Image 1 (cartoon, rainbow, N blue to C red):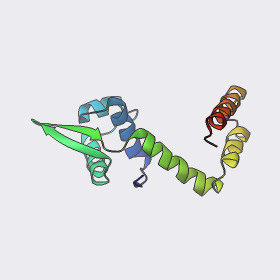
Image 2: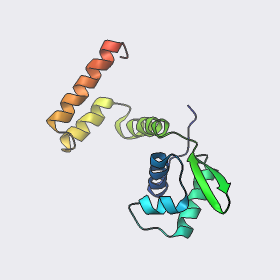
Image 3: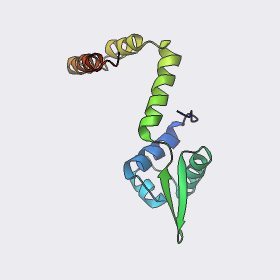
Image 4: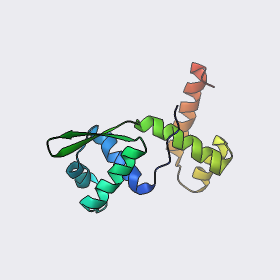
Length: 126
């Protein structure tokens, strides 16, 4: 997989909207963003996302239509590996322990994780 530059939170927020919509216009993005943003600032972010290779822009009349060039899952995998490597020395156990000790995992999520790992093991993925 090609490595893409890490996205700052502001650009990631925009990509989350575009991923959800599959194709988006600036007004549609502004409507779905959870924080206020001026149209001018949004256009700057969209241009940066194009330059980084995350978005394609197609002009239809006076309207730009943005489509993702990087899939949500590909970005998740890349970010997961980056965070795991940098913060937890590549240890999934340390990561899970940090979530559990910090109260971010409840018993049902621990059981869900256990079932997932069992499923992976049965499929020969481990």
